[in-house]
Length: 321
Ligand SMILES: Nc1ncnc2c1ncn2[C@@H]1O[C@H](COP(=O)(O)OP(=O)(O)OP(=O)(O)O)[C@@H](O)[C@H]1O
Image (cartoon, rainbow, N blue to C red; front, top):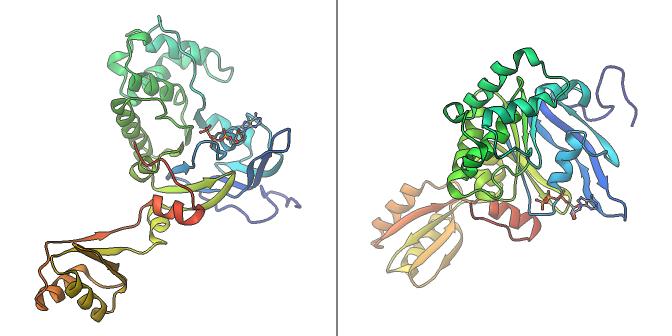
């Protein structure tokens, strides 16, 4: 690939508003295993971008390449439209969380953490630590010892450590992993708050439901390859919605749906489903009732990211969380 003067890449120029762009990003470990295979990511600014894939699909390796912690075998990337060195001061990251001292307070831990950063100014540390603690909702617990923090508070402190400077992009590797349900809720809410303040958040997860709840966009990884990316709505919209009718008269309902022109009508003992297509559910209901078919329930089943993932890869997925 030839590099044009002034342009980060010679081919497929990234959009101006991109927070992260990768082109052909590849990592092959010694021994020949390809952990990440020619990855082309486009992460828009302002998005909460879910980087979704089962364990071992290459998420952590990608994040480590994005942050310069491991060298790519091939490919290129920019953060905030800049090469890595220029961008990193504006990027906060949580990868394999920082180790905190259990006997020190949250505030003292952040001060120690900040002191280890040669680019951080000692003159502003008090203010920056205070602001980071407030931002993650730990202002009132700043003086409490770390060992007395709940799991959610510990993870929020780790995120505070990533927010000790002004950040335009926050990269979080599986931030809810190992948390209890309360901690998980706290971290998800915090991610949304940080994004609402205008920071782009790139967050990896192996949990589909989590990405659907928390993110505006997603990329789906499978064994090192990107199988889809886009807004959550566009990813789910690639598959068709179905209407489901609960009825004591499935045969009658199936006839009405077929007569209306709905495709793929399937009847069981107590319900009928069909592809909704462009039909309005209320009209389907009216037609059924008009034809004397008793309707106990009518619902529209929208495809989830799980359906998309299974359709694209044939693999199952963790759906809890
Ligand atoms: N240093 C390494 N040397 C050799 N292989 C590695 C190394 N690091 C990761 N791998 C392999 O690369 C593949 C991708 O791993 P990676 O950790 O990036 O996946 P992941 O999606 O983040 O999964 P997890 O959530 O389990 O960390 C895996 O098969 C892993 O075993």
